[in-house]
Length: 389
Image (cartoon, rainbow, N blue to C red; front, top):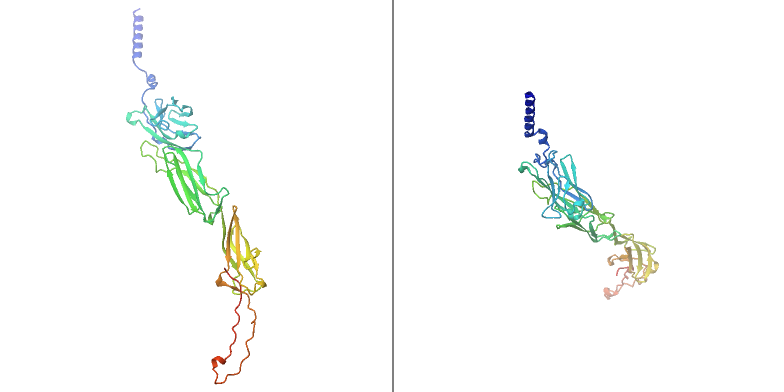
């Protein structure tokens, strides 16, 4: 009996000691112990620029897997004072909670997905580990989400057909609505020369360009590219410092360069023309021009680039005009050519109309020689076929 009593007492003491000593397995199950790892510097969140209506993932991760993190997302886009979104993988009572999702992998990633993105989502987002230990290791990573409008609002002075006149003044411009911490940059490129200007506000970015059309621009267009630069990135050790890789390009209307007649000339150019000679009128124009010759003395019209010198023109000053014309977008463009007066075109001269008088007898020495001498008539001056007015 005594031995049995001793055994019972030993068992009781052992059970009492077991209750007082914590086991190793119990200490491992404690979930409110502060995390030994802060946010992962190797997996810093990155600034993002996205198109309105798309899906975006804002990255955030810790340095190593753990079950004791308290990773929180706070947004400053809809609420400038900051509105909590989530704690670990749990979404709170945020007004936009229906569009938020936490992507949780392997107890180290807590990325925020927003879908679909609206313009109002543009702004700053903060990811932090509220359980970081020690407190000095509590890190807050801030990123900037920039949301650009789905459509660029672009205007141009170029007609819908793309037809432009050589040397005409034309402009293109584009306006982009956006919201976010980073300002998009709009830049024009393409065949020059041209000048451009950019203006940005907290909600819009605008870029315009102007140029005088040249013939080298035929069938060409200009491009407006939307991209981001590092000029407006905030300087902060806890802020993502990358430049978003977002790009977008708008192409202006393709140009078709036309021009009215210029450099109208006539050939051949000779000092003297005979009946039957052919004059040809040429001009630089696109579309190709048509030609009309007109005798302004007789009002005779000859359609076509050539006109034949007529025998009936002999003996009269003739004023000839060549008109070159073409039609561009319903407008008639023309240029006239008149033969310059310094290049009076001549028909071959006729034979003399009278003979010189017979020679008179030699005058007597008593008669003045200046009165007695005879003279030969001057040859007739050639007549102009036509001249300018």
